[in-house]
Figure 1 (tube, rainbow, N blue to C red):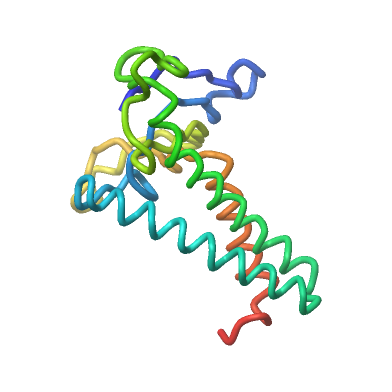
Figure 2 (cartoon, one colour; figure 1 turned 120 degrees about the vertical axis):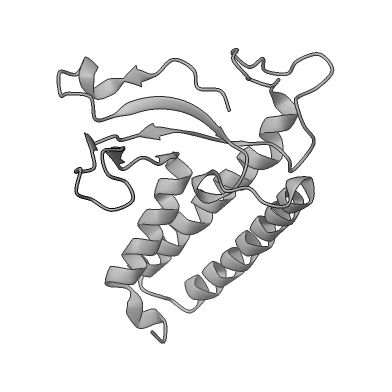
Length: 177
């Protein structure tokens, strides 16, 4: 993973150092988890495509049945975010060169760094809101550094999370929960 120049947006705006644009290539799934090598990546990519297809069909059925607009918007956010991550993963490796410790080249001679469905998803939003250390009395992690909200994510991840949380808090009546 290449970590290029960080842009501390909140600091540039005079608001501290809690929002950073941080380029990260996520080769796996949520939180960068990878499993099964290339076979695992292929299974993950195919699963994502099938899941987006199912979500898309479900969305169409809800629209045709006149579901609540808030519910339609929530499912649409999940659908759009998942589709965005699939597009990134499917094509990023085809159109960019590897970016290990360098700026990637768009449409490099000889092709990108990997084949269809094996690319990375680019994450860039980082909110290290609290940077501190665990107290000395805390078991296991005593005196180790702690950053509240460590994950680096993208707009598509935000859409998925917003859609899911909106359903959980405001649209549960559409499911037998």
